[in-house]
Length: 206
Image (cartoon, rainbow, N blue to C red):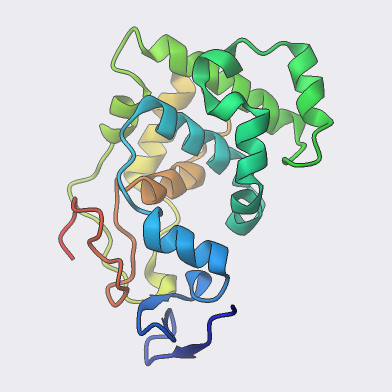
């Protein structure tokens, strides 16, 4: 059922028929609304989870997140549930298989980046590991936006994380993509101050 929505004085927040305030992007589409309410911004601290998010954020570059979210089940099936060991062992035959899979985003550079990043993830086990590395770039403060326009698209920390991951052999990990990753896995909290999800990660105070 399509959710009815009414805007408040804050143009970035929409109050749904359930009485909960959300940003406009998560207010109507049921898939995006459920993702926002239950997953986006919640802490992801394990290697598998972080690798999957790095991969999907890379595929999202230049596309809408809704497109990637709708295709996520197909991505998981095509990429062996984003298991780094499995994906890291992919050969050119697997690349061609993925390029023929209409259920995912068939971009050769992005597909190859997912394989490259899986191998880099495995190598990082000899050091601090992917999850610990990514979380080591958590800033001392988080944005406190009241409107969507006040949310940054990158930061000094996402730029530094991008640089470090590239140094470690990762691809498709630009500063803007890494900022989106940091938002998605709870490293920063960019929920609007009037959103019912503000502070839900338990890491940052509302």
